[in-house]
Structures are given as C-alpha cells and as structure tokens.
Image (cartoon, rainbow, N blue to C red):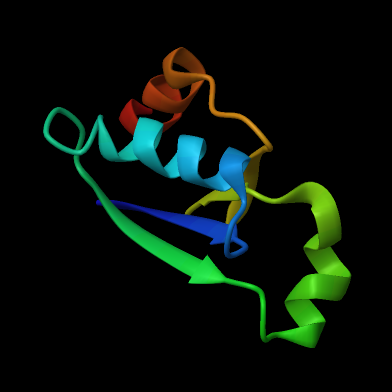
Amino acid sequence: MKKVTIYSRSGCHLCEMAIDRINSTLNELDFELDIKLIDDDIKLQEEFGEQVPVILIDGTVHDYWRVDLERFTKAIKS
C-alpha cells in the first residue's frame, strides 16, 4: 500500500482543496493518507515554505500547490 503525505499550513485554501481532492479518491484507491502541518516546524517551513501543499507518494515529492487527479491516480496505481 502506498503512503501519501501532504505537507500543509493552517488556513491555506490550496491545501484544503488538495486534501479534499485526494480524500475524494480514498474509496477507490488503496493508499494511506497522512496530513502534516508545517506551521510549527521550522525545518519543514524552510524546506517547503510557500510551496504548500506538497504531496509526497512514498516519501517522494509528487506535486506542489494543486492536485492533478489523473496523474495522482496513475501514480497510486503504478
């Protein structure tokens, strides 16, 4: 099973949209979802800054800012 991690910030509208889009696929795709806020983590803020949301699949960066569901689905199924 693949692991999807989303690095997010509180109050980030792009983050909320990305999380909603990915959550909408949970019933049809087999993956574990972990959402991590970077608000209180200086190291993650330095690494990702304003690039959130950052979507990782199995620890590798898959996308920034927006989710292309077709591309995301292909990556989960591969």
